[in-house]
Image (cartoon, rainbow, N blue to C red):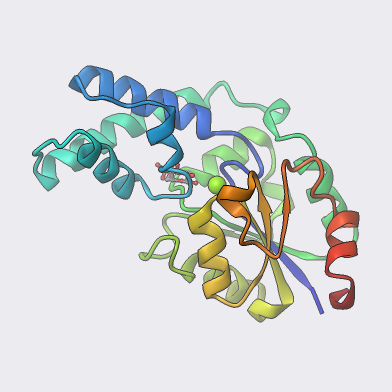
Length: 219
Ligand code: BG6
Ligand code: MG
């Protein structure tokens, strides 16, 4: 029986991927490093420090761990400043409606995000009220594709993984949820999340009705 839902944040509830991109691009430009949207795609679902390692490796740069931490902090300052413009108009289409319906139907709901800025993003969206548990980049030390963040959410909801459906837009996120024994809904293209139990191009199509129709024996 499905009793709960766990949501990734960036790319599922809201499209902060663009703001992450702009902040990494500004940092890279300042460093004289190459960075484009193709490299940015590799950062989807990946933690901040893992992200800067990917960008450094892409540029074959020799940088100390301490300097990388400093650069990641600079990027984060740019990113956090850009979050100030976010408001409830920035939900991905369908996300707010789905969260509202889950509340009405009495499902338990958790956030399972790699971002250490989740609380700020949820607050800008006025979405905090939709979540019983907030699992974010501060909750666990092993990031996706390790299952830890979703296991954390399920435990706090007092549910087993096979009682929860995870919504994810990242390849590493679907890997993480499957490693933990969760049912998965992939948001995005086949090449990225085709390994999910069910996949939708966008959140607009990933309605509770569509998900219940797919997992009909579990509701
Ligand atoms: C994930 C994003 O949700 O959070 C990644 O998909 C990002 O792109 C990661 O790097 C960490 O975010 P933050 O806000 O802690 O730097
Ligand atoms: Mg995501």
